[in-house]
Length: 284
Image (tube, rainbow, N blue to C red; front, side):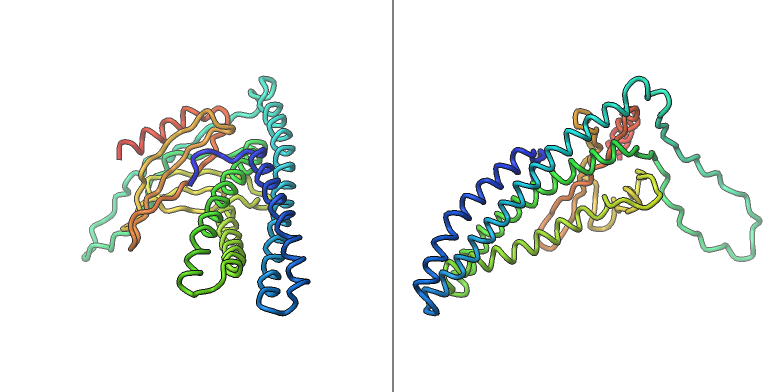
């Protein structure tokens, strides 16, 4: 994963680059397909034409997304600044709620001891996220995940094309087209899954719940500890907009250890609470 968010200007640059490549490749494939007909070369040129068209279409989509992202980001930042101006800070306050320590209830000693029921892990912190902060968080997460998936897509194409050529003995053009289409499907599904927890829930305010065993974001629960899962680090990033509390979760797989990042928005006024959560997990 990349460590920084991909800016709107970077997406615009990627879109322009893909458009240029598509403009260069598409005419070559079109001329070759017309001249070659249904021969081997002609069919290869048809795949080249398809690849150029896909790059052109993808470039246009990236360019439009980058322009829209730049516009939306500016609008949301203005809205966030207006919402949390000094005139509004007194009327909208966020106070974290800490769960009370459960007190044991005395019971009569039965003939046979009852089977103990597992108690849920105590909640460390809990807060709601206002609309302006949530929208800006979603916007930044889309940029972050988009950048991550761009590198994932490039890696799949660069590694998959020669692998398909050498293992299956197919042509470079067909390998490139097939790998590009396959990578597009995989990256699309991966992006949808990563953004599923950001979908708005009707008539419900986004909420963050943090305990020693799990984290809940917008109603979706993420387990922190298990036989194959462990929290590697918890870092508060106050300089991002909005501030972020980032959990790095370590996964043990048959091929080694991999990592995933869970990022939580911290509304204005709860920076000290986020630092307390960070300090709490460092003591584990």
